[in-house]
Structure formats: C-alpha cells, structure tokens
Image (cartoon, rainbow, N blue to C red; front, side):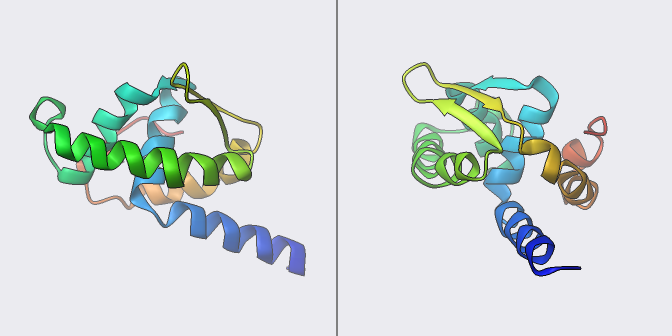
Length: 121
C-alpha cells in the first residue's frame, strides 16, 4: 500500500468514525437525495435509539447544528456529498463511490438491527 492509498484509507475511516455521518450516508445511499429536515429526524432517532416521532425539538436542534456546522462541510470537502442549506437538499457526489465498500462494512456491524437489516448499499 503506498502513502497516498494509506492516507485516503485513514481519511475514509476518520470520516466514518462519527455515527451521525454514517447515519446520514446510510439514508443517502438509499435515496440518493434527502432533505436536511427529514434526515435530521432520522439521524436523531438512530442516535437516541427512539422512534422518529418521539424525538423532541432540543435533540433535533442539536443534530441539525452538528450536521450543518461539522458533518456536512466535512463530507463535502471530501466530495462525498453536495448540499445547499437554502433548499435543504443533500445529494451524493462522485466521491461516495470511493467509500461505499467501507460504509457497507460499517453498516453490517452497527448495533441497531434496523440499520444492519437495510438493503446492501
């Protein structure tokens, strides 16, 4: 493995180490395009191990801020997603294909059966 390959692998693992990023990407892998408001609810539900309709406003706000100020920009920097905060649209970018196999391995080891039982990416 050369230095460039090792660096890319380390970056991919670091990106996928955060559960909120993985949860966002699982949803995007299924739908290819999501709306920020909708995905916030699903990510919060998975984070809290609760039903989406049981997530309170404060938890949704925390996840929203975390996605907008941390996770979305980081994923966009690596060309994994593209997003528009005005419309709330988030779409997969070309770089997603590079991390897809690794994300699938993560999915298979998630604690939540709902995630593990999703269709393969």
